[in-house]
Every structure is written in C-alpha cells, then in structure tokens.
Image (cartoon, rainbow, N blue to C red):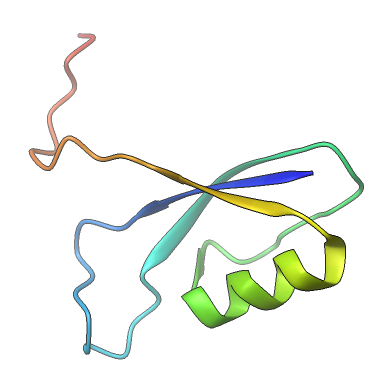
Amino acid sequence: MKIFVRERSRSEEGTRRPRFRVVGVQGGDLKIYAKRVRKCELNVLAEQTGAEIVYLPRDGEGSNKNA
C-alpha cells in the first residue's frame, strides 16, 4: 500500500499547522477523512497499515503548467 502526499504551500515548519495534504492512496482498504495531516500522523498511519509514504514534489510556484 502507498500513501501519496504533498507539502502544503501555506504551511511552514514551526507554525503548528498540518503540513501535508493526502493526494491519494493505492491498494489496501484505508479511508482518510482529514484534508490535512501532520507528519507524525502520517507515520502512525503508515506504521499501522504497513504502507509506504510517497512524497510528491511541488513546483513551488503554484502555477498550472498544463493549462
């Protein structure tokens, strides 16, 4: 099982706000109801389900290059 996440653009380290957005889940029977999660929460989810966390890259600009 894989959990795909990306770092949120409006979050910064040390701001006490959830830093990651779950983009998708592959395989398994896992439903995530939260829009944003903390890294410690991701680690617990991965540990309990045996999933791998895949961190997706950001372009850093917030632009849509496909449009």
